[in-house]
Image (tube, rainbow, N blue to C red):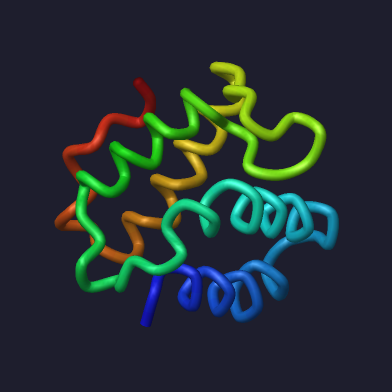
Amino acid sequence: MTVAEYLEHWLTVDIDRRVARKTAVRHRQIVQRQIIPRLANVPLRKLTPVHIEAFEAELQRSGYVKGRKAGQGLSAQSRMSIARYRRRLLTQLRPECFSKIPLSK
């Protein structure tokens, strides 16, 4: 199973049932616009802190993947929100790999 497959499963099985519709929509946007384009094909078993650090560096450098802001870096606030969100999700997947990654840089 890849990161993208797991995230789609997680959004459908957990998030869509557990949170309000607007919150679920926002979670789905973050996952589909920021996380999946960068980590989609990584197998879950091979996901490491190095992948996450590279992901966060890429967010800072080029931020937006699609739309009118494509190629622009994300603001510090946006990166911090994604880092918090990423940490909550990914520590559920592989806690032994992510316990040493700081919440934000």
